[in-house]
Image 1: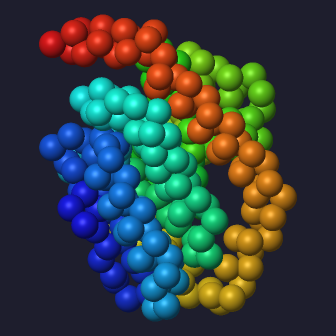
Image 2 (image 1 turned 90 degrees about the horizontal axis):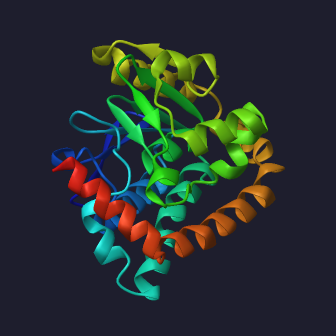
Length: 253
């Protein structure tokens, strides 16, 4: 696995996004490697909790817009990209083991969505999260069309998604979207400490807790993931989206 790896610290597996030169931006290879890493950690009999984090200066900067043309080449590539994005949410939320997110720098778009999929979240005090999808003509994924209204209410969720305003770590904490805010140097140690506390609990009990808490969520989550997939596919194929991304790329230059 080139763009994600798994290390173990006793009963804890640490899954790390490893594309720091692109701020762990989401591309085809990263999606495949992250899926394999999460499947490995979820399936490891000795792992009782998982920490999900990113190497370098950011957790995940969202979709790699440099790969947009490749992703949007055909209906088949669009469908594969959108399905593989949603598969990561299933890996995080529907696996038996609790996942603790440890995020710093940027968690943007899909990166923000994956963070919201975690069971617990430790945020570094330099964390910035936002949804750029609506301004780029993309569509949110990760089940957030169901998860955010459930957590924040309809109007606040719409505000975050549609306006795409940047939220710092303290704002996320006030919203109840992260559990801890700590200095950057303490982020991973704090996440590992939480993971060890989780691992010290009964494995059967914690896996059953995740299953029961998600029991009511699963049908709505499955529906949201499918509806988001269809909407994301339509947006990927839109000429307006291509124009917006081209304009964004020119502004960056």
